[in-house]
Amino acid sequence: QVQLVESGGGLVQPGGSLKLSCAASKFTLDNYAIHWFRQAPGKEREGISCIGGLNEGTYYDDSVKGRFTISRDNVKNVVYLRMNSLEPQDTAVYHCATEGNYYCSIYSPADYHYWGQGTQVTVSS
Image 1 (cartoon, rainbow, N blue to C red):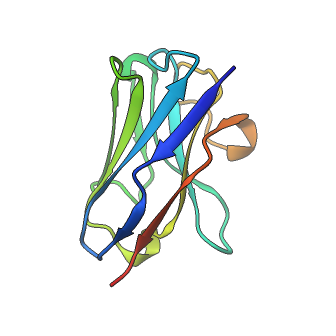
Image 2 (image 1 turned 135 degrees about the vertical axis):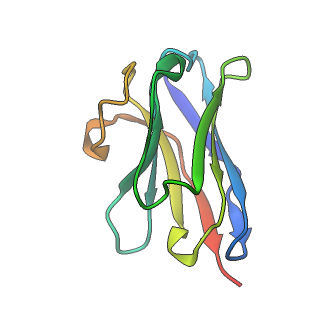
């Protein structure tokens, strides 16, 4: 059984930073690509970052490139998303997902079956 749990969301001021975590239960994440998605009210769910199994490549959407950093700690079985220079348009529910793939080769949310519950990120004064 694949179980993912996101944490670390909250309220932050524009220009601030936040670090999200995606923790796995009942399986080991290190061999699997983990993709971060976000969905704002009235918007489509969009992929923003991915890290391949065993750190085999990373991906960043242009909207977050240079501001967000994805990483993983295989000992803790956790994938992180460090978000810097946050802007109001970053406000969304953030989800992590996996399909058991090794490479960051799946980018459509419709092709993922294993999701965390999501964590809310709100960027506002």
